[in-house]
Length: 235
Image 1 (spheres, rainbow, N blue to C red):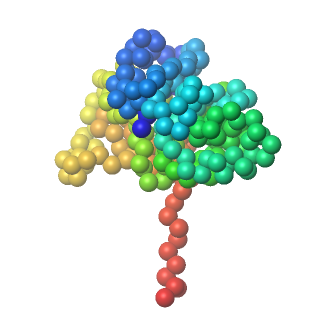
Image 2: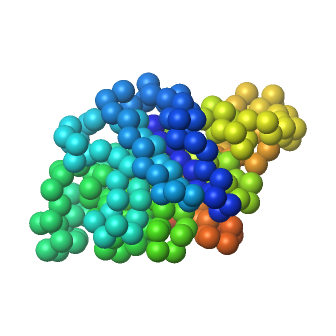
Image 3: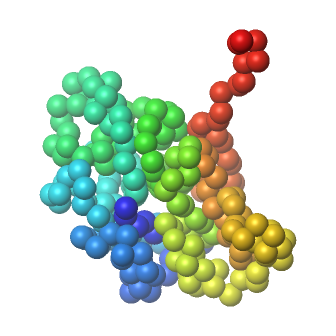
């Protein structure tokens, strides 16, 4: 279990680093081993609280840039098939120095792209990737929704996090009104299912979903996994 936090700003409105660190610290219990922050001025900042599991060395630190330097990645979870994904990379596999699944993810994204990589993943995960070349950001969650991933989006600033209280404490969203429809849903079900958030303009990534936001503020959702069609001809 690790904790991720990030902001993607289209209006050059990143919060100060110290304030970002304080909000990142809210998920310190999820990753007590190491805390790292990566900032691209005026555009993105990613933070990570690490619980070391597969690779205990600093080679497994995050946030991580892909080998080409094009993609910035923050990843919480475990990719069960990451070794087989390495084999699909051919000779590129020999370049990977870390034996952890984060490195496997970074190399695969470089080789075949974000969406095609996510479609190949088997495991439990919450992933955020910023594409520096296209100035676009991607959020995704495993098909079962084991790893949480919440976000706030107001058309200019995207904030994502492993914990909802990190979204609700972010300056852009902490003063948002309670969504009355979601409140009614909560009172009826006693929990808030994805893709809803209790505050206006806040949400949860739906299991098996990819959220894509480009530099023009256009948001698109696609499913990277869905239930197979039921075959009622089998007896």
